[in-house]
Image (cartoon, rainbow, N blue to C red; front, top):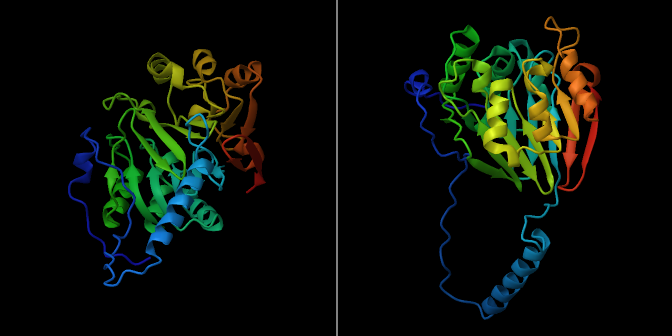
Length: 325
């Protein structure tokens, strides 16, 4: 992809601000259609046919209770095996979202995975927080793909990985937006709601993580990045009635710092996915977390055991496949 680089101004300073800019994927403006001088006698009939098609389409696209129905294409959630890190690709009929990209050495793996999934552009890239095991692999993604916007919390880090990530964003002139608590955006019938961070000056970078909920029809997913118990408690206090989902992406690779009993009671997932490296140096997932998940009879999927894990939903049921690296 050849694009003339144009650097954003003062991006590193802007990360300290909490202002949120409107999120809008790129697209070419439509050309104006010139009106025809002569109006065909068939025009009224054509208009009638279009109206009939719209009415019929309405009943196919919306349920009787007024909730949005399921579009013809499923939504796919790919939990990419990036070792001791996180990376999740969400593919809808209306666009794609990549949440994190693993560590620096995983950039090529993530890029190749996206290519193999026939992803050529990304509507949004979500860099949940500045730790290397979440943004390192995104550097190569930013340099290889057309991206509508990058969402990241307004916090900075002092690492070389973070500096290179910011440089790549500036070089490719990609819009950066900060998450707005409670804000939503939609792609192909899937609705994404931002549940965190709720405190831009959070100090602990893990607790600055962007938390996303995705709803598609009657199915729902919660992506928690590396939030710890303090943030989990605030989520329960502020969004208790909105936390129950089908699938939980377990926070912080299954660390004991997260996934409290109180939080699990509120989320009450049927399935949980843990992204982590085999035989990692942190002892993830910690035994206490596994016990909590097992006690609630939650189906557990792990990238260190099963490799890439792919879930698809038609808005009614969720199917799972995996085991391929």
